[in-house]
Structures are given as structure tokens and as C-alpha cells.
Amino acid sequence: MGALDRLPPWSTTGVGSLPYSDGRLAAARAVADYDLPFCPQLPRVEGEMVAEWLGADPRRCGWSPDRDRERPRAWEWLLRELTLAPPAHDVVKLQVTGPLTLACALERGAGRVPGDAALRCEVAAWLAGNVGGQVAALHERGLNTLVMVDEPALGAVAAMPGIERCWDPLRALGAPWGLHLCCAVPWDVVDRAAPDVLSFDLVAAPVDRRAATTLRGLLRRGGRVAWGVLPVHREEPSTAGSDRLAAAVGRCDADGAQSLLTASCGTGRQSARREQQIARGLRDLAGRRRAPVS
Image 1: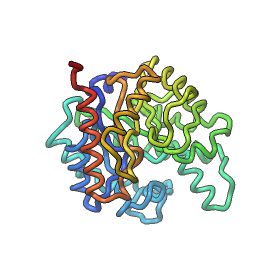
Image 2: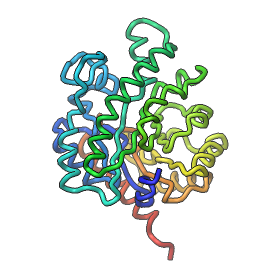
Image 3: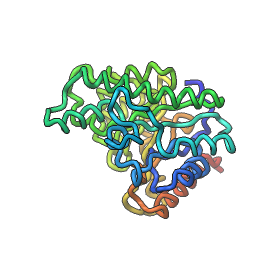
Image 4: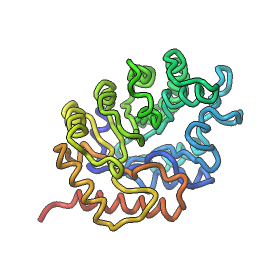
């Protein structure tokens, strides 16, 4: 995780989606407005996170072994923005719909109850091949990658034995990897999966005793937490996010070097004004946490 050590304390980043139809504008915002730039997902043109990968449109990443693995709509624009303004820490985040969530969608679409371990493994291998191309392209440009695997379906199938092995092909890419969970977090699965970064909705799930146990263990082994500290769907007083974050890091003994700041979820279904408001709110919160205590 040496690349992540270069991130500034309390680094801000987006969860994944942005509310734009123009890939050029989305890429510019993802690079300029956040400490950790990311490849933006564009649900207004790509569809929601499952359709982005499994949709029938051949211009996208569809589920077919012989289909061209085209990149997200904003990908080429992101590479241009990173060429013009590479981050000083040389780290870029990729948010990827996870193999568990994609496999569950395929099974439900076929009228089956999710639980096919072989399908999960097949999807994971296909996904790793796709993401590996992006990681390699960034590496060629002198950039390191944090691969964040988005698994909203995890809470529904967490009791399946060995579920954590479905991420092995993504681990094998050699880049730091993490889990983003907007579901109720199954802390025992997180313990077994041992991601380098855990991103979760702190607004919906304040840190209780069980959560604190897992988070302390993750931090002790050098991991990081991306605190989903600002709500996406509602505005709130500026002090609320600060109080929420202070309570969480206090329970886990986390510091800025181990912490990233995000919204509670992606902003792709919000207005551009709301997305920019959230980005400013994260920057302000990071600035307050970085300020020396007088």
C-alpha cells in the first residue's frame, strides 16, 4: 500500500458516479474538485451501476466473452485531464461494480436465487481482465491505482460461505484494493476479506462497538477508511458532518493519514449544484481537520 502512503491526510474523493452527461466535464470535475481523482461513472448515459457493465448496448462493457471491453464513457477524458494535471501523489481511484453484485443481477435476471459460486468466479475473472487494462494504462503514465469494488449486494448474501474469495482475481491485479459498501456492513465478511480500504455510509451506519472492532483491526494492519460522512440526498448544517466524523474516528483511534472523506454514496442522480456543494463540503471538512489546533 506504499502508493496510498503519499495521499494527504483527510483526502477527499468521490464515491464513483457524477451527475453529468458530458464525459469531458465529468473528468475535469473528478480531477479538479477532489484530492484523490477518480474515473467518474455517468449513470445519465451509461445506466445504473449494473447496467454499466451488463447492459446489452455493445458500446458498453457487456457480459460476453468475445465482446470488446470498452472503457467507461469518461475514461479517455480522464486520461487527458490526468496528463494535464497529474496528482502530486500519483494515485487514481477506479470504482468498479463488484463481481458479487454483477453475478446476483445475472441470476435474478434469469429467475434464479443468487448463490452460484462458479458464476461469481467467472464474472470476477472477466472483471479483473477489464480493470487490469485500466490499471496498466495508468501505470504506463506513471500513475498508481486504488481499485474500489462496489458491492451493494453483499449485505443480502453475506451468509454464503467463502464469499470473500470472489474478490481474489481483483486482489491479484497487484494494486491496492478496497470495498465500498452502501448496504448494512457485514463486519465479519470485511474481517475475512481484509481490504486495503473500506468505504461505507457513515451517515446511515454510525460506528458501534462491532464496527469499531473491525475498523481498529483494519487500521492496525495499515489499512484505511473512507468515511461516507456527508449525506447525498439531503442538506444539513455544516457542523453535522464534522461531529459525525469526530465521533467515528474517536471510537477507532483513526487519524488523518488513515482516513479519506467521501459522500455517503455516489452523486450521479443528484443535480450538478448538489454535487458541487458536496465537493465543497468535503474540502471544507478536510481543511478543518488539517488545521493545527491553537
